[in-house]
Image (tube, rainbow, N blue to C red; front, side):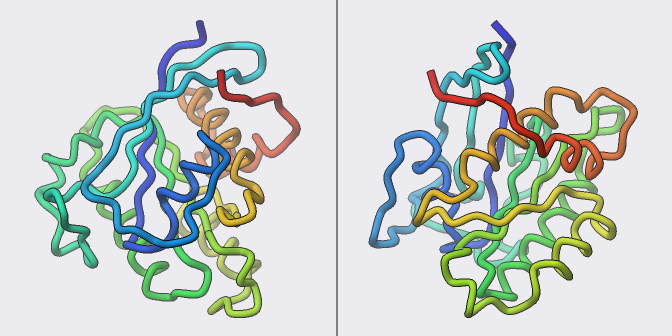
Length: 203
């Protein structure tokens, strides 16, 4: 066994958090968007580079059942998120929605501010979803990637949950980064350094 990893997939409502997870776990895509009714927890086993890891994937924002916060002001106290011991974060935004990008920006800042003192730095991968709607994007990919990697010190990747493009790669990069988080390297460098072929599959 390779161990266990706790991953949180967060972002504004409607950006495709659940769709990304379902493509990764089940290979399907819901054609109609249904708001997630509170946070969900998935516990798959993943084979990465020959070792088996038990994952705990939290889907969605931590809010009361039946609600989905549209701004960080609507979130409960960060101490109640049950995310402070998370090993890695996926922050999802819609490449056609600048508001969802601003949401991720504020969320990343709040995660950093509320990380327990002395806790290892959890890698953050910012993911631009809905790449299949490339012509409607609000900003150039290169500029956004540079901002996230150099300014926010996070990893950056774009995907299409609808067409299952880069979804497996997304989780592979995140897991590899989480596994080496104790090494003395910049988190963005660790994520970008992980971008090479590796075997990753569900058990």
